[in-house]
Image (cartoon, rainbow, N blue to C red; front, side, top):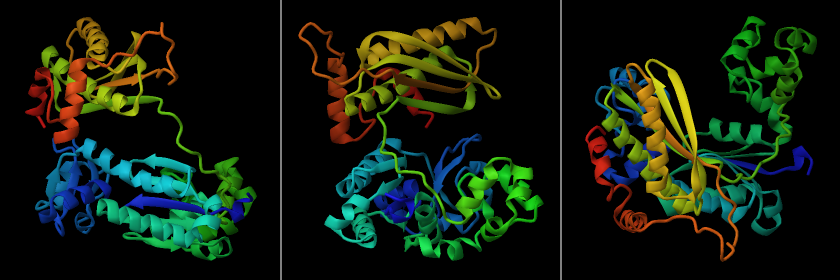
Length: 391
């Protein structure tokens, strides 16, 4: 289908993590809620719109957020809960089209061109998505629509919060012209500064600029950026690919210099990634440990399992060995960050009767059942308890 005839929807949940917290705890509604790391090295993951009025933004150091909004409600992220709600949101997406490109837990592009005849116009489908998300999760999504990814995303962003807007191809130039050039896809801070030096500050000015002059400053990207400035974008929606890895990591507020404590965090990570792998029916072969020394020196160590597995014991055995080898080799081991990931997933196929069966051990099954019933983290191994006191 020609790019100008496509029907693309961009959905982005409003202040997702903070909105989940406000939904689960109604007493937080109307208050400035900031979700992120709460230690001296913490960073804001998401904040409510009430907090944004104080100047708080995502990716801002939490210490700075506290200065701007000292009376805010500061909360650690609850990733398991956010993933649960995200699953409900993505179920809505897949009810209208199989062409869903997830960008994060709370954001996606949808190509609904093939669904128009069955479900109605792009606006009808967009409204259906928005209302279904609210009914099932109690949360608000901003929906943008257009003939391509660029216009659909900008439409949603321009109408936030609780957005709902469509930009047609014929209106693209007028809609985009007054916007800052930094709003364009591919224009980062460095490129934005280069454009400013040329006297180009709006998308309209970029579209009208001399291409040769732009090329002198920006090289081969000049033509691409001018096409975007005209609202032209031929990128296709790429349905989500098979998961390549599952990981978990933690940045410590105080550097860890005790191996036993590092091993406790390692076990906690292994529990989390193994549970996620089992939930998805995945069995991995490769374990990777990520180790960051202060200030920002990062090492990775990798090893293979004996057979594809989603067992905490199997993953932890290999990860613990990698950590121990690294620790022993350091004259003064200290960790700022520790992470573990599982990858190299085996293809899901009907096993032959002589194939080894991927491991799911009894303790894992019991833990899965209890955590499913009473909430993630209700049952953990004793070795993890020490890390919970530091949350």
